[in-house]
Length: 261
Image (cartoon, rainbow, N blue to C red; front, top):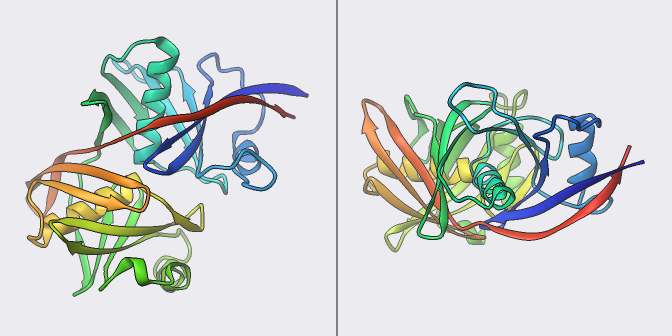
């Protein structure tokens, strides 16, 4: 049995297992590894597995391979912030970096002790009805406006969208939000995790952009998730947004080793 070193990080309560795979020697199947390690009863437990790998494109510093607990791949905003912080710790260097993920190229930097990453441009926001927007921010998200997210029974409410006719095949993340006290307050149900998470970077970004699009928020928007507060900055561009960034706190929880294989 091989021994796999790992590090556990969290970004506003969104927690991840980080593995240094820069040598490209990870023998285990990443999909099976994600399913095993992310299990909160029989593994380490997390909202995803992140493999830090050698750069795949010229002019970048690393590649982030992110896998959900069910083994599916997507972009993860909080995961990318943790991946950058993990790399900074490994190198002992807090310089800004460029990296690639499943949805393309991103930048990352330390800002006032927090990690800020660039997000992909959003070409358009689809308003499904008066209370629901659909936005793709690296992962597909529904932003559902409700009276009070805290009061909701979130899993059955989310399942009505997640497993509805339009999204049942590929899945969708469902964010229940309200504009309150000059900020977005929200809770998120994540596909791949198939449960509520304390924070979701792409979901926070989607909620902030929706609020901006609806004229509720300025080009910089604070978002309060159960796990903490994040900030989203963006520039309106046609019917969408560009120069989007996500900023928030990250922290290493612990590091250890686990037998695999």
